[in-house]
Image (tube, rainbow, N blue to C red):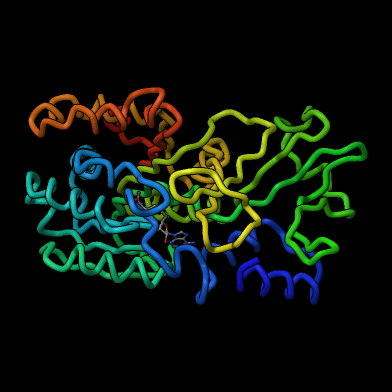
Length: 350
Ligand code: SAH
């Protein structure tokens, strides 16, 4: 076991089992050895590849989608362009380039990037140093100034947020925890304390024995905050991620390393941890925050509606387009959810 694994085992020895959410936070964000805190995980040399890294078309079309939503709402003054978890900054660079087509918007925006990783913030600063619009960084959505219309994009951000798992077993529901086995190795175990059945939503109640219910409190809280800003000041948010729009009973926590799957508990910090996004839960959170919700629609559907075919032809980017839109590639597992103020027209592609 690596050094972070040993530190987590020592923490468990001292305080008892930890939740999967705590484990994910340590594995991804521990300042010394956390996965995102210490590296650039993207691309062929890295562990996985995301849509903006596959093609510039992705960020361009998202930038233009946000511009269209802004125009549909009567061009509210001085909007703030925000991205959650910008990775290498590629989506934002491509979006800002596309926004040269809408100078009236580009001239008044300020950009805020929400990024917790110091290593990735450095890469983003380099990528955006000549972008021509003011950019600031914050580490938490709560620190995004909330006084302006919001134009927000998030790609593969919500899948990286910590989840909890509850497992149905003979006598009710129990939270799945991370503990250390007799040899000191990290292992999963159910909490002996039952989880109150009243907290399990009606849609999950008929789970089979062994069925898993996952929650992502951080994701719901963030979407609710975004919805509140949009409800109050106007704007739009486009959330793209892989996930499900109807409840399932399987577990979706996964570790990815070198473009393949890895063991979730082995060598924390050395592989990316993520979980499928529950779009139903995010929808409920957005409604609680007071925004109107559109979608989720499949990524392939959205990009086709935004004109990816014509753009791919101009760029000679047929293969990249297929990766983004075909069902057996990223076209259907990835979905998009749109938040706009109540009463605004449905955004393009929804
Ligand atoms: N959007 C990029 C990167 C996706 S990876 C792309 O599509 O290529 C997830 C990103 O979210 C990384 O930049 C990671 O550092 C950031 N991140 C993960 N959890 C975070 C959190 N809790 N707060 C802020 N940023 C976070």
